[in-house]
Image (cartoon, rainbow, N blue to C red):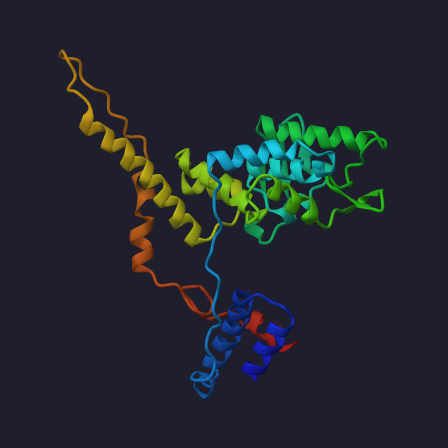
Length: 295
């Protein structure tokens, strides 16, 4: 039964990680019923792609930004790119953004719909993101006063713009844009990864990153902890080449840095990633189990 279920989900083009999570729930229920041993040897987790994304180099970011302004038909992709790079928003969050979620006076955006509840959050807009949103508002105003329920990125089919429907994709424009910039392998989701990396390089704490970006996996947080550690190591390496202070003036000591954020690598070595559920406790509530078997 479990093997057939996995095969059916695979045929439906569901990601391996999703299949593992769902079978993990079935596994927990069957273990509680003392039946899992009948299938344990035959059912193994599917291989999961562990790439968490990549950040661009300074040169790549500059090339991408310049290329985005060269063609008018790339406007949607360009403005979405600016928003993503300056807010850490996912593509799905950008597409479902409505004007009622934008506060121009407070310079904030509210993410009401996300992949998880942790993704529902309020994000301050910096100058670049605010300029992009204002450009979108000016464009929407050419077709009349934007309604609060209208989408910031409306659907456009055969030249007809429908602000009551969100844009489905800017895939073609994005593919052409990144190819023109010389980085054809860059995914749109990598823009979120790049923004979070820059936050980490700016010494933002894990709590700050999660407040801005919403749900961030433990694997990603451990990666960003290493980014911060590299910066701290470079700063400390520079101390060895400095000359001693002349005179009797004492040097100032700044103890405001959070030293805990560099321990992510140690934690990752101690904790083993769960193959099925990814959680410390593999037991699941009975309500979830009932929903699984009600399919």
